[in-house]
Image (cartoon, rainbow, N blue to C red; front, side, top):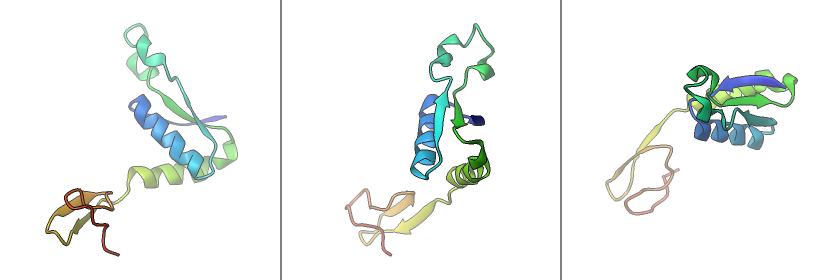
Length: 100
């Protein structure tokens, strides 16, 4: 096992680990409940971590995580006139899908 990264909170750590697993990279979250010890231990030692099961997947995992963290945000104009930003593929106002 090899530590891939430290996450700012447990929700982000779980999202990253799930995304890695969906991409075929075996990952798990460590220090899941250690946040409760912050104050007794240094705060940076209590943050959740994402670990890889197979060391040989490290390069692939780092590239995948970098792409996930630096995904470009789209902005498109819906037929109803609403500007939709972010990763949304459906208009929040009228429900129409993003044009191809």
